[in-house]
Length: 250
Image (cartoon, rainbow, N blue to C red):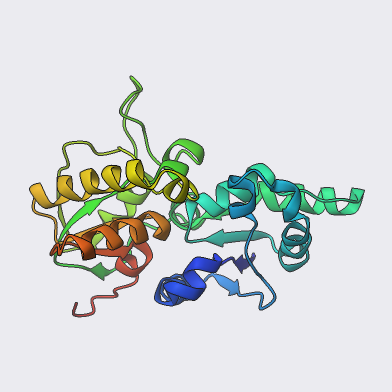
C-alpha cells in the first residue's frame, strides 16, 4: 500500500512541526508514506468564500499529485472533507482520478484506526489534556459521536489517545461545541467567532487543562490566538504531536 501524505498549506507555512510529526509517526508504524513535493492548497478557502469556480487549478494540481496513490492521509479533517466533497476533474480521466482520490483519502486518526488499526502506540504525554471536537471531523467525517444524537458514543481520536501513557483526560462541560473558527467565518463574523473561541478556551481553563488537542490545526490556531491575547496558561498541540511522542520527555 503506497500512501501519499497531504499536508495542508497553513500547516506547511505556520505549523510545520505537525507535518513532521505526522510523517514521523506514519514511518514509525511502517507505512510506506510519500510526500509529493508539488502539492499546494486544496482550494478550500476559495470554496468557503463562494468562489469554488476559482479552484480549478488547485483541483487539477491535487489530482496530478495524488492520483497514483492507494491511500492519501492528512492531519486535517476540514481539508480532507473538502477534497471528499468538492474535488472535481474536467476530463473523463480526471473525473475518474478525482473519484479514486475521494474514496481513498483519510484524516490521520481515521487512517490509523480504520486502515492501520493501531492498538499499541507506545507514546507518553503526562499532562492534563482537553480534546476539542472539530466540526468538520466530527459532523462531516464522523470521527466521533455527536451529543445531539441519541446514539452510542464513539471517538476515533480518543481511541488513539487512550493508548498514550500518562495522559490525564479533562472532562469538558460542552465536549463538542464549535470553537468559532470556521475558515472564512472568523474573518466575516470576527466578533461572533472570537466569543465562541473564548467560550471554548474558558471551558478548558475551568476544568484544569494544560493542553488543548484536536485533529484540526486550524481550530487550534484560532484557540491559540485567543489564549495568547488572554494571557492564558493553556497551550495547544495537534494530536499527531502527542501520538508521536514515543515516550519522549515533554
